[in-house]
Amino acid sequence: MKPILTIAIISLLVFSSCAWLETKEEKSIKELASSGMKEFKNENYKTAIEYFEKLRDWYPFSKYAILAELKIADSYYKLKEYEEAISAYEEFADLHPRNEATSYVIYQTGLCYFEQIDTVDRDQTTAQKALDIFKKLIKQFPKDVYAGKAEVNLKKCLKSLAGHELYVGLFYYKSKHYKAALSRFETVLTNYPDVGVQHEALQYIALCKEYGRL
Image 1 (cartoon, rainbow, N blue to C red):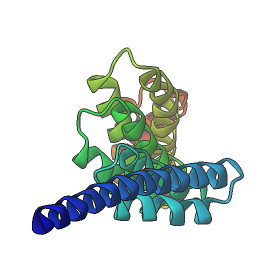
Image 2: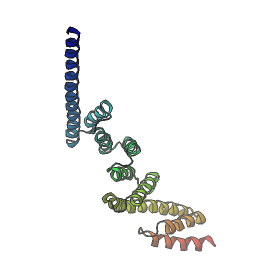
Image 3: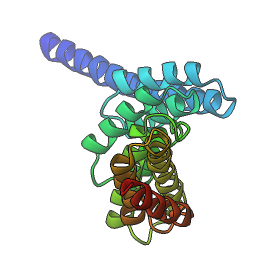
Image 4: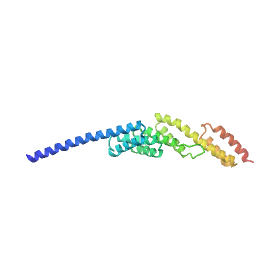
């Protein structure tokens, strides 16, 4: 009887221990999630990232892990660390392609590029990337609230790109490189006909053709 009694006692201790550990683990998960959200709301984004990374790394199969992944990306965005934010948003999209937050994640990715758009005299790579992502969002989720927001920002991207073409065109025009200038002004009309600079482009197209014959 003694061996049976010993096994029974050990089994009871093991199961009791597992139940205690599970409760403790669940409490720890909720504490990390709560602390992370509290720091995020208080705009302590670096500290929030620390909590969310612990939650993600320690409990990857928890229902809170997805929240942690998303808030890590949001925290980087709030810190204006856009490269890190883009990487985090893209990783989230790859891991959870059917998640209900997908449209938001795509929008935020585009917004990371959008926030980096420079003046028209500078490189417009970020404007083009933002434009491409906003177009993807609108095509994939045409009736989504974030598609509506993307529409607004999309127009700003187009205006920045058109402004750059016009700027380069004017540079060539002033340098009397009329053929190169004409190409730029015609690109404005072809690719960006409705952003408010087409009339100026038309004027310079006529001037390029006139002086180009001289």
